[in-house]
Length: 446
Image (tube, rainbow, N blue to C red):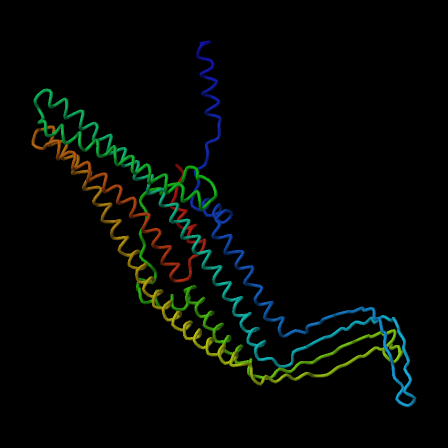
């Protein structure tokens, strides 16, 4: 009893240790929000782009400038009397100090008004781009998470398959030793076992690669991940009409909205450059002070001046620069129109593809679920036939391979279907964290 006491204490300590909770999809998403460099860079870009609104508005507001000066003057010269012809020489040293305060309020500047409009549009564009970045983070998180789960499932099935092949190899060798199996069965089982061992190594490498992708996203290696709790429901998209999804995407897709904002900015850029041909009118108010201790004539000055007025500037000719900028802006506007057309067409195509991926993916999952049941029954029947001598070891190996291949394909198909639902929402412009929560509810700890 005394010898067993340390073991009992160790067992109690192990039982008392808290079991680490598996990390689910929401846990990984929160980590990605904190650590993903792409997302944090998008947030910094958003904050920078918000300043464009302030910059555009500043062009319509008053500007105030202040300058001051001080100089020390050394005067020496000769003056000739035009009547007597005599000359008078002299010198003087005096200082000049002064300052000026000026306020300029634009009254009419077409370029500035266009820049102000651009600033407001840029803020809306920044909002849409940040929303795109958030949706992209959701998609990348889901992709990385389910890629790891798929690789883990694949490795588990590879190991199970190898163990089953090893069992069949041992059985074939025993049967061959007593004359109940052929050498073909032994060689085939050995070849399948060696191939399964090689595939296991390849699958382990693939799992490590996918784990590194997830680690890059969240800033550290992930712990144990929650898996799907079991068979999942496969609801059809609502509405069950791809064209309604395409129509909704045309109004809500964020990439289209960004291109629309870019088109509006390009249109204002044309107005801004055309403003170079228009006159400008400003309200100008100034306050100046001058203290001059001397002059050529020996007269000191101490003066304060206040001025209020308007200033008109009319451009005449700038060597064709303004006209060239207008032509460039018009060409950029046409480019933006074409980019918007392309974005609409690509969104329509991507929405249809995502819709088909959801609907066909559901059919594929259901077919593979039935195929798994059939493959399991086929393997059981083949094993019975092998024991009774009507089926060969090769038949058993083929049945095992089909069963584990079906399990692997079913696992991947489920993850692909879940990701397809997220992509359909993203194409529609409505993907958000609630969609992740919905999927996360399907997961359970390991």
